[in-house]
Image (tube, rainbow, N blue to C red; front, side, top):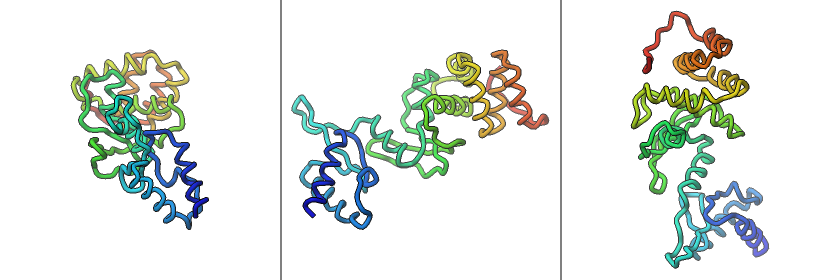
Length: 231
């Protein structure tokens, strides 16, 4: 038992301070699950670990100013939540980083395939919305997905008008893309509602990418009418 406990302790020693981890991040035989739980419980009682929620822990960082232990950084909380829910960050928090709004969000939004009810995690209010594609493996694809999310939400981005949101999405995020990324954006958009494809088609028309605009046009019923939030 002592060697097993030492093995778990060594694995925990390799985890950076402030990083949230779960049982899945530790390597051990499944029948030893209860033993691992005991080890983690003992380390928590000794203040070597902090239990942030059931099955999730982190190694606390000591303040260099003698202020005791520091809380987990928000970025790490968000990383943990997106891993846990198998989703990605979207909504006002991301739109702020995309320079689409200056308003700071009161709620964190995570896109997931199967949305769950809104909940609180530490001091964060979290809501889940439908993801139209699976979480990508690379940041560039994630960037393109967030552009499509912003187009989908352009009526409701806080602290700005729909027209201003449209203009910023186009000028800051769609217009600068090279042809290969525009092609990928068009391909991804086919997973989104027709309204998103139609708005993207308008942006491609504005960007003089008529061939890509036509690719989207054939995916939309020609008799469908849209009430656009821009001129």
